Length: 165
Image (cartoon, rainbow, N blue to C red):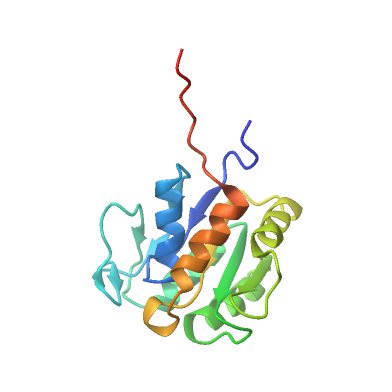
């Protein structure tokens, strides 16, 4: 039996933390989705269509951020260190505004076992839809790998293993 059967990962599709969450979900058999700006805008151009994202009415990143927080049970915000800025800070503010639980995990200065902290957060809050947020790749080199590794450590693969009979 899978430990977190039924969990869905959502993000806005931006490079860095968002895209790493979607890539993790796709590669490991987890449902994914979320909202992205109209036109599927990201810093590297148009977000690929293999990401199952819905477009907002406007191209404003703020609208996408609020909808992803609103439509999730909880949010995990990744960062390089303890500082949040830009869209990550807005995500925190939206989680507070909507009364949604949130967890901030950082590459430097965070918990020794970020995957364990995330796993406990998801269990404690009975999360079925997890919004994953954090900085774009150009603002935080290495954030994508950190996010992917933490998600893999916390949730592993959701693919059903085939047995040879």
